[in-house]
Amino acid sequence: IELSPCGRFVFVATYTGEAYVCEVLSGQISADLSLYDDPVTFAEFSNDGRYLCTLSDNGNVRVWDQHVKDWGGVFHNAYLPARCMSVRRVGNQIVVVSEDGSICIWDYVTDSVRVLPVHFETVPNSVKFNTDGSLFAVAVGSEAYIHDSSTGEIVVGPMVHEADIASISYSADGELVVTASYDYTSQVWSALTGEKLGAPILHDGYVFDAKFNSDGRHLSSLDIFGNCYIWDINPSME
Image (cartoon, rainbow, N blue to C red; front, top):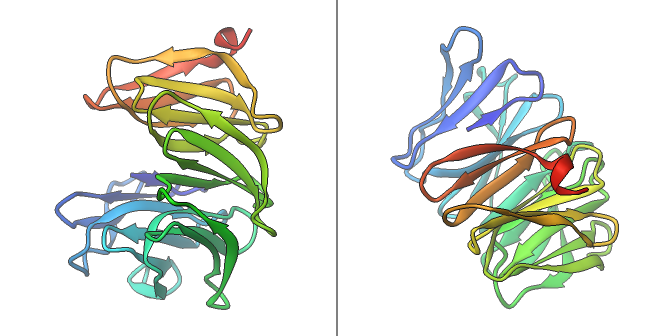
């Protein structure tokens, strides 16, 4: 599930391959994107809400344009093949991690691909642009790093868990990242230094996802049992 920045649309996908863009206020389906046999595993809207970028489990990255047939038309389609991706909030770019461990930046307006001089022996589970797209964070195995988007150079890290990291995400101001791990914890880090901030946030099982809210004071997390938690992170970082 993914909410557009304007709050008007929500994208919903199921493991059975159904995918819809719905109006938030009415709940009505604006577009049925269940056109392919490859279920969507990840989705993000562009900052202006016009484009919806989806990743399918067969590695296809598609960009849907609200202005083309009310979401019904694929603006661009790339088989990279992708493992995970993140949409740049400023500009028209997606950072894509491929199944072979390579990373590229795809401009979905010009349809150009720039391969970065970065390669991972273990394929990353998660990647995320910061707010202005100058950096991206990547989770590979039990470690996380922050890279320069222009050069691919590591500028922060490693940030280390005791088990594989399932996801990584930035705060809105770009100063913090949060990781979710199979070691039953989520952890807040300084995106500037890689320093661990506060104690690990303990869960009863694997943690699949963690994200900050817009003010950076709270974060939400999702565990293996389907439980969703909201945490006030300021006390934990004191």
